[in-house]
Image (cartoon, rainbow, N blue to C red):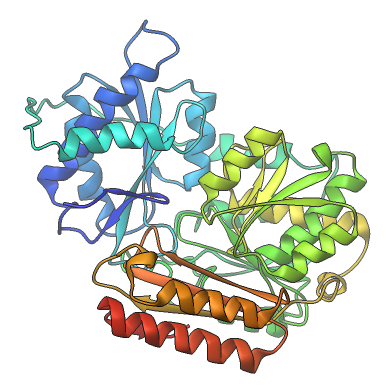
Length: 456
């Protein structure tokens, strides 16, 4: 048995290990044994909040998890279909002991996942995840009684909607603007249209008919084509695509051109400085952010702290240096002055507020900085050996890095949520970096047992 926790909780394919009903019960029970030790107060009945996205497997996973949680006498508050960031927000606000979201985020519908949040609304620290893993993988049986209790259900939609609106400048309105939103057939298929309509936007809504098996399918933040076409058809001010659990978003300008997380940071970070909300003159980005963004912000006198991929790494850096904004090119942006984790809807309204305040169309922000060509490749892998153990691989990487001579970079990592090796090569010449990426993938495939390349 390998590690259970990846970069964003535990993920897998129901009903294969570790997503068998019996093991899910153990996950629920083990989490209460560990997380009950992190309460601020020992008084009262411990409380756990649970929500899910629209995947068909979510209800049965929830049932098994709750059976394990009940065994340690936790009170369970079921939030129903709800976004991941909304649960993170509510755990802190309701002073619960911890929260769980059943979601595989942007992954296809056949996957599912279990994400944990501490009582502070943050993803669990690795040390705490390790304690849960140790209990589950120690080989010692986790024996507990299956006890049934009533699940209390509560709809916090109004509370979350009011929270989002409270983050905006007084009198902020989208009245008169045509906006396209793509809800990815996911967690915000109801509330996202409601929020934007209350703000006055004239909406075109797509990806808002979930059937349990169509979340993220040809829609959402990873498949923005339909949203971009709808923007052009509607003559819209912009378009916004969320992913399945709405912790990220992508934009389109009025010309149908995509704005990813790097573009959103290039808008938001200087705006926060302009409004005196950028602490310590810094922002956080990951190693996957385009070099052009880093150079653009540096030229404005804004320092960029770069961290490994994963919103948890972004959050940790923001907490460590008391920074107010950070994010990933995937569209996962954290506005820490309002929320502890990335929130797609919060990001969308904050970007809209910035763009409206600066009085320009979205296309006016598209050419602010030079984007270096990037080649992103993926290999499906059967296992994940350390890269230095793959014969000749590190030497080949070093040789190519010397070839780029400081005008590009190579970044290689295993996905924390899927059986994939990800390769990024960046430089001034697309033909050169394409050749480098292909040679690296071919070398890894020959010497590591990788299964096949995944087209991007």
